Length: 203
Image 1 (spheres, rainbow, N blue to C red):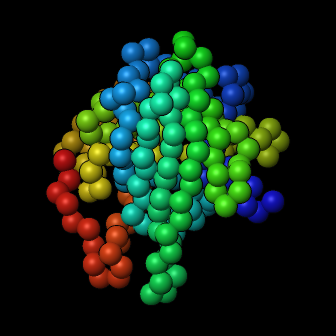
Image 2 (tube, rainbow, N blue to C red):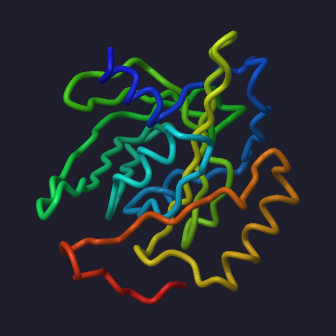
Image 3 (tube, rainbow, N blue to C red):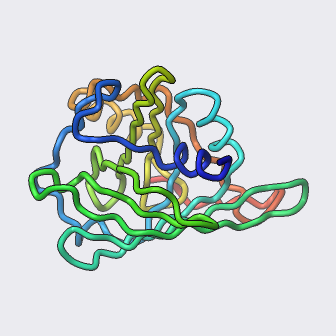
């Protein structure tokens, strides 16, 4: 049960009609061939204790999307946990399948993380393909409340410059008002161990 909850909270789920979750805007001209490739999750959305726990315990996350045709992706995500001086690398693999041709940025995900996880929903809220993408999920648990998860992906591990980050966030908030961009927190990038940080220039 603990593993199931961890995977569910990490990915998030949502449905087309989900009373506790916002309406997700469609990206009618979403281009899967431009979206595929390597991305770096550089920030995560602070939605409470669970997201902070998961986000703060991870470093150097990477993701690879491979478009296999018809809006279907193979997906692999790696990240590292730090335990004292030890760094442990973990991997999650799966498939993203389209929900509807009318909503090409809506996906049903099937992931394996030590064991196969239940099918979930993942949404691409925004992307310019060459620099950034914003991914989002929302789960309505009824009387137990709603859980949101969100991530900013970037083509470079260093992420945005502050100037570009401010501009992108302003544009996103104007189009997606339910997303509070002030709650995004940067992942640590201790990619070579303690004291050795990855330092590519942000763009």
